[in-house]
Image 1 (cartoon, rainbow, N blue to C red):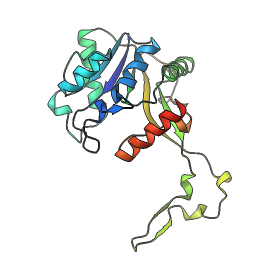
Image 2: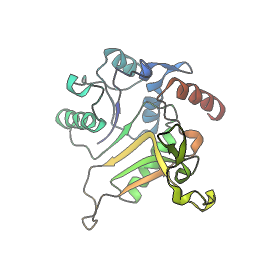
Image 3: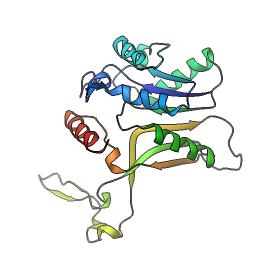
Amino acid sequence: MQIAIIPARGGSKRIPGKNIKPFLGKPLIAYAIEAALESGFFDHVIVSTDSEEYAEVSRQYGAEVPFMRPAELAGDFVATQPVIDHALEWVRENRGPIERYCQFYANPFITAGNIRGGFRLLREKQANCVLGVAEFPYPILRAFKHNGQGGVQYAFPEYAASRSQDLPLFFHDAAQFYWHELTDLPKDREQSLNLPYFLPRHMVVDIDTPEDWRIAEKIYQAFI
């Protein structure tokens, strides 16, 4: 069995009601639900939430909300993995064995095509995990930091004179999807194989602030 899990806590502080706030006329979480359903890969698309309102909206767009997240997993400082583990345990006990799952966040830039691409990479390379990533828009080794006196200084002074094109590329989590394989993998591998699925920068916006939200809407309108 393959399942999709979308964690959606109801108590967002920086953007109140973030997961169901209308993004260009549709609740933010609806984009992830619809992409997961469109991919055709999942026996169940499950939203883990502590909010009855979020649950109702999620069901309207085709997701299952077969349980409400317990209070101890709904606090501001609870990490994501215990929430995912709780969902996996519930599914195993009530639906059966899981071969693999994909974890999503409420993100309008998730597409069914990229979900399928991540799945193909996971299976072809026999990876433990595949996650969407994007290249940083500027070389991070040329970054500045506060110097404690009101000014800034190079965070990595050894690269201050380096040309941008000579510096290595770095990538960041796109905060979109994470495929996880739960079946047996090659026994001779010394460590887990976590592979990147590269996304174009214009398809990656981490929406954490009202400014991020406005930028994401403009980018979505321009490219999608």
